[in-house]
Image (cartoon, rainbow, N blue to C red; front, side, top):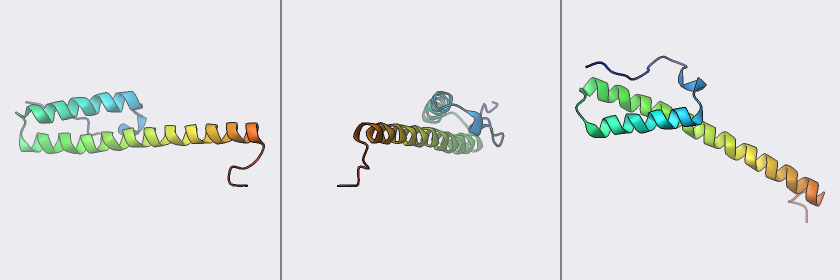
Length: 85
């Protein structure tokens, strides 16, 4: 049985959120199904950890962009800093 885990360094960085999430779902599914060798299971687990980090970075980036947009909108509407008062 060959492993379908992509272990090429740096490839996770180019993944979009949806791609990383979908691959992570598949990794979890394969781990839960069992039937893999210990080595394959470890490789899947490591890939899953990497994919989870990619998803976390995307979500943190989205949160930062939303916060920045909301702060900009508040500054334009209020003309004052939220901390002033």
